[in-house]
Structure formats: structure tokens, C-alpha cells
Image 1: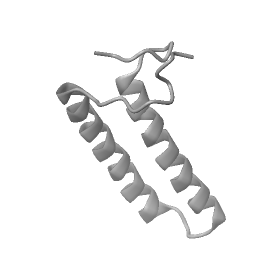
Image 2: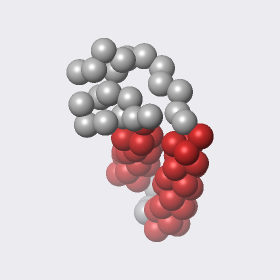
Image 3: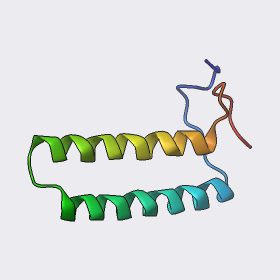
Length: 71
């Protein structure tokens, strides 16, 4: 792991724009899923995993594969 893995990494302006686009896409998928999935533990699991994927997408935008910061 890169030495900065557990440190805060401030995104660049371009990364912030990419994160906003990705968040909007995840929000849209969430809206579709909310309309199609019956309420229950499976739907809850899907939403939780969707949130997890959204968070990891932000990491992918700001870091290289080895964990070093993208600049």
C-alpha cells in the first residue's frame, strides 16, 4: 500500500467534477432500483453495496492502482 493510503487526499478540481458525474450516475441507478426492487433485506443489501461502490469509485478517481495519488 502507498504511504498515503489512510490519509486524506484532497481531490483536484477535475477529480471533483468526475466525482460529481459519478455520484449522479449512482443516484440515478439508485432511483431506478428503488422503483423496481421490492422492499426487503435484499433491496437493502443492494443499496448498501451501491453506496459502497460509489465510495470506491471516488477512490479510483483519486488514486492509482498502487494507491499513490493521481495528480
